Length: 238
Image 1 (cartoon, helix red, strand yellow):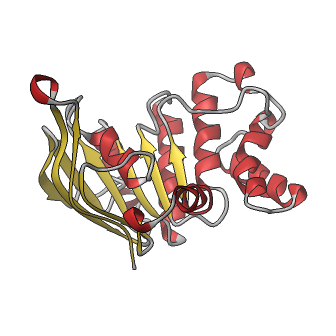
Image 2 (cartoon, helix red, strand yellow):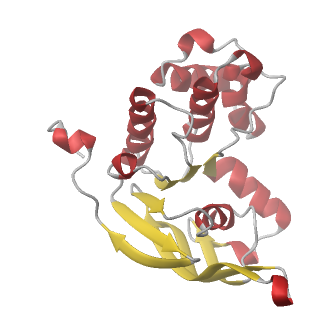
Image 3 (cartoon, rainbow, N blue to C red):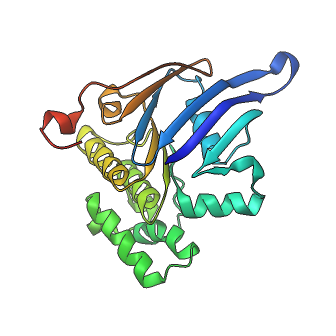
């Protein structure tokens, strides 16, 4: 099943001499269980692609569908429900709530969706444990390092029954070992059926993806299957 479809999507900011074309007729499909890496220079439209794919921003033209639902046909409340229930986000600035512990931040999307506090906390703790953060579950964001906050954000994005994961430089604040841990977790989520779109500048991390999309000046200029990634080199099943 196609979990994300962008069809001839364009995004224009400003008017006249100040007009900026962030995306130009971008078409992209991501199936359930697939990871697509998006690469390109700064200002090429990578982050705009993510915000439009996640219904955080409206395209100027074109069609966007998530799990078969045309976003243009959905109400504001419907989009908010879709984001809460079906889409996991990893932002560059983490977007953790400062008044909640790491475990509470991770559990919050589940609780907002009606999952009991006990079950949500258990799922949150499991996700934190998977990223080596079990001992930081009771810590607040300002007590965590940048890398730890990034991993908490990853845990929050993949916890629960999500259909689509959108990650903007998910390893930007991490060392190489923790970057690999994060990509393993995203890869494992894809094996469970999640579709993932990961913006990265790191070719080594992009090698975990099933497909790499290159964007320049708002256009997709190339798509390719990457060289064998870390798991393949280890002889593990991808």
